[in-house]
Image 1: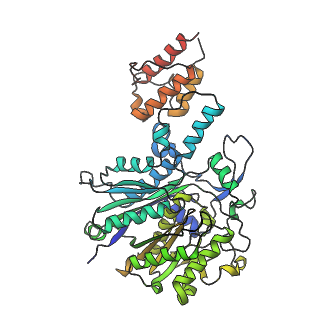
Image 2: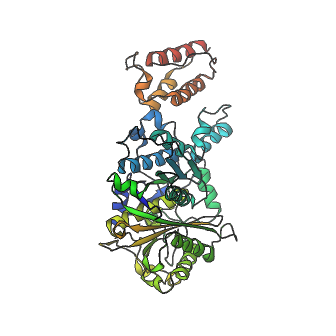
Image 3: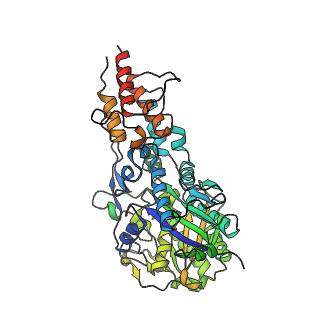
Length: 417
Length: 78
């Protein structure tokens, strides 16, 4: 009998709220966390729709002294990680041997804000020296290391930087580690704080950001809609505690859902143009890994960022994999509400989907059904209002990255054990 | 002597501590300062006075020692 993997803790900081529950409640209520944002200390005027974690208060959470030693991506990630850890009830068992437990984390741009501050000081401020913690604040594995130190985890501590698939791959790799027996418990997720002036300018140069003003910013991200015009950058963090199922049952842990499968693939075609064939390979791999029939899947949390090409290609991949069942699959793009957190996106999607399976709820894509693009037809789009009281058996989360890396996670509801 | 106000303001912003109002014996650790944040703290104070302390200068442990450091650095500047 192969090992099963339980999700026993969930944490999230998003533009919708500073905790998993606050974020999920706001999502189900149909609120948007997006607004017009003007980055601080911008040398040229700049404002754009973005997802800022406005309710997140690192000074209160960490104390001012410690908060100042952390890049914002680490602050967001540690907050999500410690929420998941507490949620799993693992803070109450100190002294346990945790030398094989580990952390798997995802981030795309890591400590971009710290680097940007350093460059500004050097090139504009005329400073000769940088603060001594610049390297250890900005490095992409800083957040994972802080989490391992905080919880005394002595096994694998790895960070995956695979653009927008980073956190999904981290969760997938952690899942395999637990299922193989290498680690009984893994803390897995990702975090991103990409709203640095230079990072925003780089994304603007790529011409994939949705425009908007103060009035339209909240609904600027329009996945699957005719008038979609690009993605909306956002910051955030998400985390899951993955635990050997038998161990979780033995200690009486609350099991939110089962992480049953993980699939990955590479488009190997183009850095920015996705491929439905490549995505379908990852979807099929996740289903096979989970021994899950396509007909079991009731919900897909789509990658759908709101770009012209990406959304239709993802629907084509879902149609290819699900065949006649595609029309019955509920699909939503929650980035319409919380924006695109890049390397953390897979963690937010996983946290939302796990809570959805647990509560029997499907969050909606913000916007009206009438605005949907016929070219994105073929699945059951959940729009406007969230579906509550849903009997969900299984759900997938998609994370598709620039560079062509695709990662799909397959979850089963707790009830189907 | 250079103005010490920016250094005190920095500590106030960074730690939320008014060094002139707090007990001099209070440990910096009681405000959450650990070895990493102490490195940053001393670095930024050095920057305020454009000096680099000798490597064998013991780092401040208490609020009083931090005040003494700031005043000493200010006094050594023309």
